[in-house]
Length: 272
Image 1 (tube, rainbow, N blue to C red):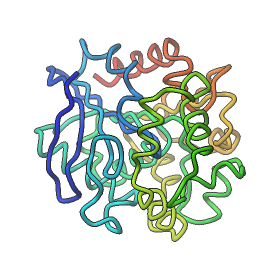
Image 2 (image 1 turned 90 degrees about the vertical axis):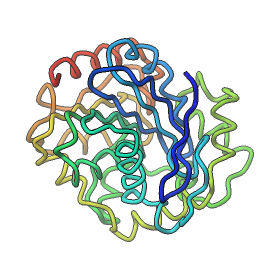
Image 3 (image 1 turned 180 degrees about the vertical axis):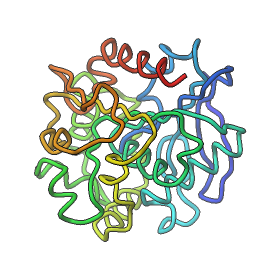
């Protein structure tokens, strides 16, 4: 699929869009990763849905943010996604968010519910907007320090690929290049903003939204506190509770693509 570009107030956004008819499936990647991480979903769903995969500002083929302090936050990323979708004429869509992309999905749910037919998040604990919320939603790990680091080391690059996308991708040159390319301020400012409690109360959003919500997590996710995610009282989560896929970590969409895509297909059928 050919990479396309659209100029927004946050900078130039790179994205894939097959421009097909039908409901749009909008894909949002993890911290320091890129739209190519959804290649298996673009292939699987491109004949059925309008598949759109986006590089966030400061990531992948997108430019660095024109105003980093404004754009490099969950609310700023959500604004950039909304501006892009409006600019390319997408008014009704489902959101598919991985890790940071899932947090952006919850930000969008908090503000533009009327445009969203359904939402899928994975590797994303819905957290309260506080330090306590961050502590509750994530598993403590020194490796997680990179999520807010301005500068990363060569050793960290492979670790980030492995943690975010699985062992099968720790040497993938596309993703290693994307991690190196990421504007370090995108990590630093986003984490500072989150720690300051400037996001929406994403726990409340996930628990109360009327929009159909699918939550999938890898049973061996080293990052997410799965018991916390499962303990929340959701109003409209699909199947009645979050789903755990056995034998997978933080990137269920790549580690167990067949099972993930099957669940995604069933969910999308219910909302269309």
